[in-house]
Picture 1 (cartoon, rainbow, N blue to C red):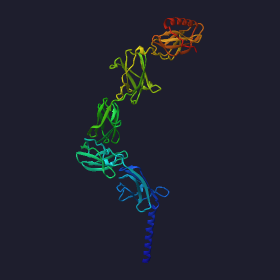
Picture 2: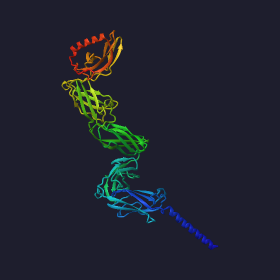
Picture 3: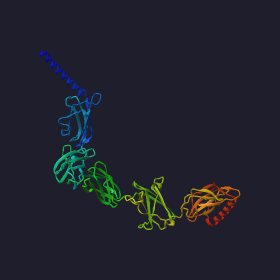
Picture 4: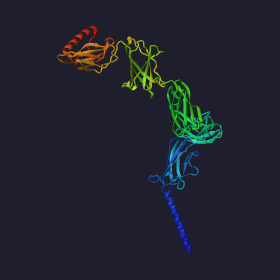
Length: 557
């Protein structure tokens, strides 16, 4: 009986053992065929890069149930930085057959490198990748790599025992944080060369911070300047301020600022010159707002003030420095067309400010005293099809000589950030403008009233010498009837046979020296034989005494 029981127990144990072994074999690496290894190439010496390992079966599908342990081997760089070099890496269920070692691999020498990934239990389960390693543009042997600290500022004061250290150096490289002569931490720069590190539990009031940059052999190849800062508890924490337009801007430029500080502050303000703005929190610890750069050229500091709900205030006097430069002249291709007492200007504007709404012309007889001004309509109303702007100024003093153009906002205020045009000269003398110009007449219409027909049209300020009225004769030619001072002409309708005639009108300037280029016609004006005779007689008399002009350019239809 005992013998039978022993045989049963041994049989049971053997079955359980082999069953467990078989089950384990089917759920781990038994069906995995190879590893796919992906690494960036080429890379530079000391540059840290990602390593991506995928476990694949023979068909190329990912083995999501792989739970084996892998090692990474570099064939010809014994000092290369390798992830999990001692104990290897064991896949987890959450990996689902794919693992990325972020910034886990770097090399200490140049050349063609072979990277092999192997399974700890199965020598036939492996994968390889080839990487070309090059020497950096600036050799690491010089030790002169640039390291910049952007926060905290030198000689700044922080209101707590922790601060965020930010800066930039060579991309994908090791960074050491040194505080008061001791290494306080280590981090890595990213693909953009920037780094960030949180310094906590600072136990000294006065501190010296320095950042060191290392190459692939852990040799120091660059150091930042030493940053001095003071710890004083109580006030809100200030981190950084960023001016989106950069550190060099034109005078009067509208500046967009972003302030990084402690979240949920009661009030955040910033000042530069005479401009002060209140900043709003758009997300935790990020406050945005605008300031206007000074109108004078020079170097100016941006000051930041933070206030928390307890009334504690932190002030950063020199949070940023802005250099203002003379703004370029935006007014281009200014041209003028002159007639007596009137100038038509055509001009372009380069890089228009968003606030630009209209323009102001200043002018006068002396360059130092431009006492007269003319404000245009909204800019879109005076823009031509070519994208230029056009505006005229009439009734000018003939002695006027000097002009300039300024930009205005929608409220008619001068734009401080937009430079006025240079003062330019326009000659208004009669020698420079022997002819006047009159626009074509528009809006002709007729109205019958109390036995008369009233011919009227749109008035134009250019017609300084009134309007000429013409009538078509039996030969189809227009003959001059009368010059009238206003924009209407009355025709008395005869009581006998009614007939209809065609009339036309032009504008006249400079005592009849010039008139509109084209006759503006109106047809079917009610008149009569008696009235027609009177009009023709009046035409002959006035034509002889007043106008003395030729009408050869008016040809019949």
